[in-house]
Every structure is written in structure tokens, then in C-alpha cells.
Amino acid sequence: MRTNNFIISILSLLILVSCDSSAKKNTIGELISPTNYLPEFNEPSQSFINEKKKKCNDFYYEFMNPDRFSGMFLVAKNGKIVLEKYSGCSNYISKEEITAETPIHVASVSKVATSLAVLRLIDHKELELNEDIRTYLPEFPYPGISVKMLLTHRSGIPYYGYFTFKVWHLGKELHNIDVLKLLAKYKFPLNFPPDSHFAYCNTNFALLALIVERVTGEKFPIAMKELIFDPLKMKNTFVLGYKQDKQKVSQSYNSRHVNQGFDYMDAVYGDKNLYSTVRDLLKMDMGTYSKNFLSDSMRKLMFKGYSYEHPGMSNYGFGIRMRELEGKKTYFFHTGWWHGNTSCYATLRADTVCIIALSNVYNRSVYQIKRLAPHFGDYPFEFKDEE
Image (cartoon, rainbow, N blue to C red; front, top):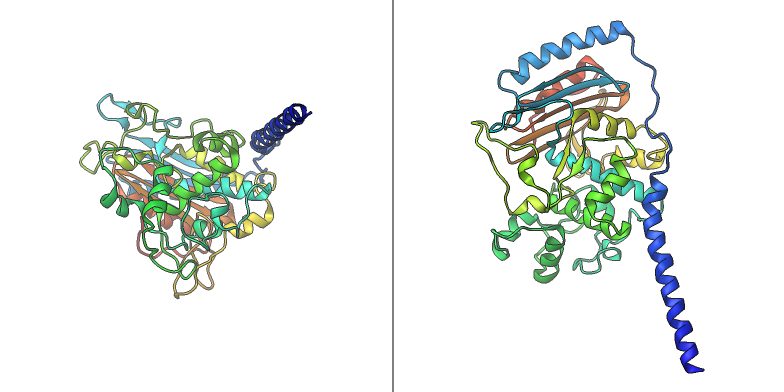
């Protein structure tokens, strides 16, 4: 009798584990149902396209310096491309030219995509915005830090690029799980009490990538493909995995065209390591307007400032920067800089305009796309460049 009870107990346990495993696998499956995630907007008039195309073309030749620019540039209204430009090489040894289908490392613009994955999981009740992250990462040593604080850079967690210098062999690849293990082992002091103020820190998004993995049961590159890239038909976008051949992706160069190579931090994703094109990033931007892709409530929370403890125009939402000036429309954007890759993505929400510039050769001119914003609406743009 005891043997039968034991067998029944084991079978019940196996069934429960199986059901739980299926539930995890179905989580992403439900999110990538064949619904059309790209919204339909009225197509801008040809006269509008012609007028704006000239202004954008003038900007490109004045500020981007096409003789030196290596990358891609796009401006779109209501999802309709006004102007796109491609120049330079993804690999200056093999002379592979950059085309519309060449994925480039977008650096910290990756945080926009990571945020969208997190928000989609919140929409589908797989994550809680205000939940202590130890619910998902029980190894994490600091209490009182929520998912929201990671999204808004208000956690106080130190940057892994600093603390690893003391405790990590710099010839060994660092992965997201290693960042968590180091925090758990050494319990480095927080930079400030959680939610007391804003401080931009890549560790926040490295931990968000781990949370996505724990919740979905998939490695982050796969989860992002199923949560974001496939639904939005971003066919030339991927998160670089540490086992991939790094010589086959777009290379990174300094301003003298010297290859910057890869270092021990290049295996960490969520904060960076997204490779994409301007056309694919336009699709991602369009997805942020779709009720099928992101709920109205999540969209409102994403494009809202959370750091008003210091006066000024700068603020940060969920993985998105913003400039707010009284009497002006809010300018939403995110910049990036990793090795020689520089990037800037701007979404003019009030006018459904998207402006993107990506470069694989160090070039701060990509941050100047803010100068185009006033051609589409009453936006602020006279401010210092940022990474």
C-alpha cells in the first residue's frame, strides 16, 4: 500500500512539473499569436514627403558627413519612410558594404527593446512591476528593489563595469548570471538608497534580462526573438549570443577605423548586444503604438518621467530618455555608445515620427538627429549630447 502511495505521489509530482513546464513554454507562445501587431496610420501626402525629404537630406549632408559616415540613417512619418541612407562597411577588411539588411550593434538603444519585453510580460501577468526582484532572482542580496526601479535606473545598484575590475579575471567572459553571482557573493554597497534618485546604470538592464530568462524559461536571445522580433517581423535583428562567431557580425571601429574588437563584458546582454537595422527599429517603434502589442496602460507608463527630484529638462521613463520643456512637445529618445558603435533612436510621439541613426565607426554626429525634430513639430532640441 505504501509503495502504491509513493508511486502515486511521484506521478502527481511529475504531472505538476510537466504542467508547470508547459505553462512556461506557452507563456511566449500566447504572446506571439498571429495577431497583426503593426498599427495602420494614414499615409502622409506626397507633398509632405517631398518637403520633409529635402530637409532630412540637407541635415544628412550637413551633420552626418556622408564621406566619413559608416552606418545607416532613417526618418519616417506614420511608418512611411521619408528618407533612408546607407554608407560605409560592416567589415573594413573584407569590404562588406552596409545595406538595409546589415545588422549593426545598437549599443544602449538595446534598452528600449529589453523594456518592451518586460512590459509585455507584465501585460500578460507574468511579471509584477512593483514586485521585489528577489521574487524572480532569489540570489539577489539587496531588499526593496523592484522591477520598476530597474527599468527607471533608480535602484542604486553599482555598475558591473566598475566592480568587476576588482573581483573578476578580465580575460574571462562575463555573463549576466556572473553579474548576479558577484553581487550575491560580495554584496557591494549600493550607490544610494533605492528609489531615492536616478543614476543611469547598465547593471539594471543586465538583471532585467535575467528576469526575462527566469520567467520565460528561455535564454534571453530566444525570448527576445519570440517576444519582440518575430511578432514585429524584425527579420534582421538579434541579440548576440556568446557562442556566436563574433567575426561574422558587423565590426566596431574607432574614429581612425581601428577595429575595437570584443572584451570580457561583450557577453552581457539586455543593456546592449542588440544588433538591428534602421528599418527593423522602425518596426519596433511602430509596435509601441499598437494596442495589440502593448496595452494602453503600459504605454502610458513607459513614456512617462519618474525622476523629478532635480529640476531640468532631462528625464527617464521605462527604457526611454526624454526632454520635457514647458510649452514644447516631449522629445523621446535613447542614445548608445559601446566600443566604436554609436546610435540614436528618437520617437516623436505627438507626431508619429521616428528618426534613427546607427554607426559602427565612432561618430557623435548620430546624436544630432535631435536637430530634425523641430521640422516635424514644436520640440526642444538645444541641449548637450549624451551617451
